[in-house]
Image 1 (cartoon, one colour):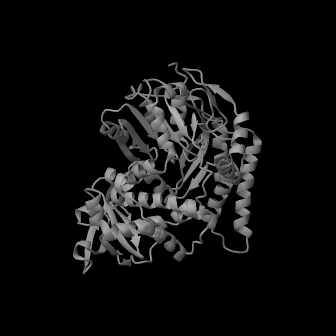
Image 2 (cartoon, one colour):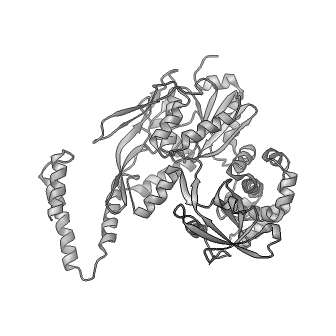
Image 3 (tube, helix red, strand yellow):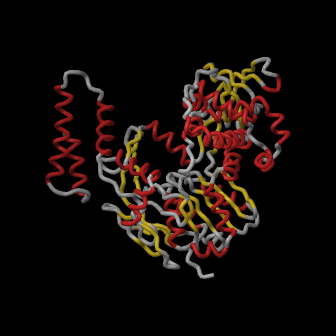
Length: 526
């Protein structure tokens, strides 16, 4: 009881809360906890009780306040710190067996001589043949930097004729936040997958690698956000120094304006930003600022609408609270956060799904959305949560891709691509030495599409008759993309997807190529 009283006294003294009711409520909870432990029929697991109480309390508030255990926090921080302890290898399964798909240059795996197509028989004595799920593999391979790990390997170069025991030490493996960076028809393109500590260093390096460009596409599709500073810095790359990027404001946090700190490197050339339903938080901050200043044409679908700022509070046991303290606002004053009702997270995410799939519902929201004016050219832009693109690329409702998406979600196309990769690596490398030659020259045969369907049937995925005609075409794209990923990593997949079945990228390219249209979209007189 003394601890409860001390907490109440502290909060009251610093003015965070006021009045006798708060102190009485806190003492009431302490009494409840005391009597529960004193009287309950069975022995209680108090750690679990407290954690569930914290989660349940936060669930009655907004959708983004959260509690993380020490283990959950560690995994989460790896993403934003830009590295983890591992050996630098990616795997793929073929026929229930585990194969090396690629290694990172200079990593322990590469230094130990692991190569594409080598078979991993066991990891620290744990058999890797048809028994390990992807999450289990990650747990086995990752660990503390410097910690040893033993792999049992059969080499492709020896026709898998014998097994070798290879001892490695885990090292710091970087997690790149840049998925792809390339130039096509003098238009540069970079895809950023999240905002972490290493994002801007990676982005500047990637941008410099593009060479001379006549326009630029920044792809933030699927980017769920990350560190606020990284988002501010990326927006500032395209704007003058000391430009307001975003404001944050909340009950216990005074309004704070965040400005670009350095002179932008690409402040005048044609710029298109790609967003979609899963672009959130820092991605919306970037897109919103560039839209407000009429600096970029925003293309894609309405973003998620996560504009709540969380402050992380560490607990004594290594767990953490992420408590919402503020809202994000764009420079024109738009609140990025989508409306929600406290304690109704399921409805909040259902609303997001409905906006994605129901155009009439989306249009009805746009009618009542508050209207704002951009800060340079006075264009009308919508508030009400999320960033509404200047050019909307809706889902293709004329085609039925249900079956193809089912196979893709169950990793059938990836499994087939890995099989093609392992069995025909030398032939593929010889026929298609570059991703450009692969995009132009490789065609997915009817037989391969039939094989993917057969693999789906074996996996228990029933065919959807009304979807089969449309799905066959998309399956070909998925297979080609997955094979490009096996050959050239995630950039290979993205370049293939952009070329073959991503209409948003094609729209961005055409907008930059058409100066009159580009200017008209930004409200610039030609």
